[in-house]
Picture 1 (cartoon, rainbow, N blue to C red):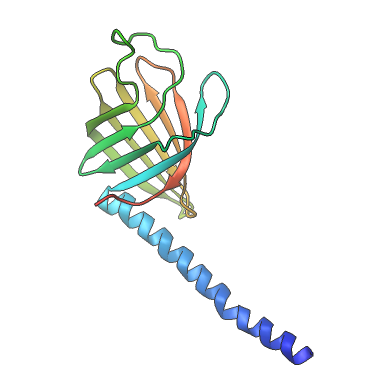
Picture 2: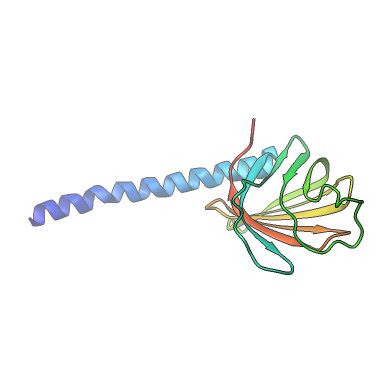
Length: 158
């Protein structure tokens, strides 16, 4: 009986090293996509408006960065100070990036800050991307209250 327990315990040791290697490979892939290629997509699973309750959307929302453009398909709830008649397009737009700054913060997370302008507003998107792929996004507009999102990095869409 002791022999079987020892064999089963020894067989788990290489698996833990393999799992660590896979996590490191995934993190290196995320670093490459976000910092070097500037191409990634975040799938949203939680929305936190500045006022009101946090909710988990049933519709698949996402934001994608590709080819120096942002493709934002995000819900917006909050107060707007100046918007076009009918509400405008909110956070559903495609626009070129005005700037893109990505840096690795102590190998614990990636910080990405970008500015863009849609037909309705000028926005600042701040991403914090962690080694497990979890991502927080803070969106600040000039004419709208800020809103936050939590999601997971899903890679680039080629």
